[in-house]
Length: 246
Image (tube, rainbow, N blue to C red; front, side):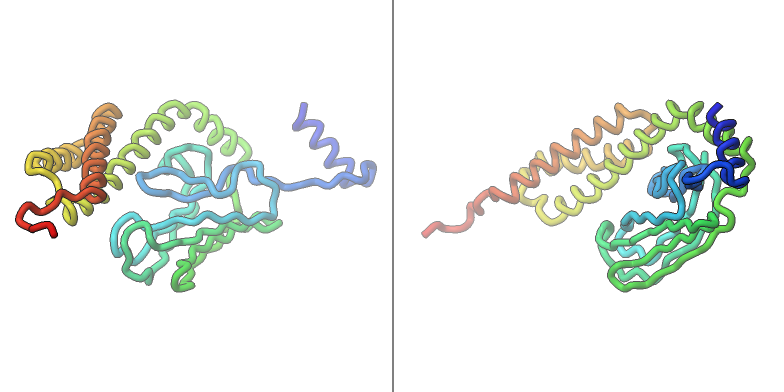
């Protein structure tokens, strides 16, 4: 009924019988890009009125990463591979920096004709790369409906897969940060705690390739314990017994 009513109103507007109504075009499917772990991060949501522009800021996932690939997707699935690929491009020339430091602004702009412009800019250098996609959809109404239904059908499995990716990303980040702290300050821990930390790192490495949430959560708990011990040792270092107080 809604579709039929909309068609009737549009016909009335075109014929001049219906006045003072503005028809707005909307995006049939969400637009976004593939992010760490194969997730789909939406930048413009489905049914958003066009023309419009939206941006999000991203960063690097490894130290001294000099380029990032922008994989543009269209769809409603949580997992990138379940959506439609619209194209890829690469932003290069990012200055060497620790992971998480570079700031990459990714902008999506859709004009009134449905043409999509995607750009990625490194804030530090101003270096930019972009691409244009015509048309926005290129899909029939039946194909659009099928993609939306698939998102509903796979919602539970996608949610579970996303939870695993998010946990694994968190584990890998905490592992790297804790290992860096251990390299600098591990000597402040007792030998027993140092040995435990080394085992914890090995277990976390193995858990990052594990297939269950429980294994990853167990490894996270161990890493958090080691990180807490390091923080305490850094704030309250044990006095060197070979020194003399004055």
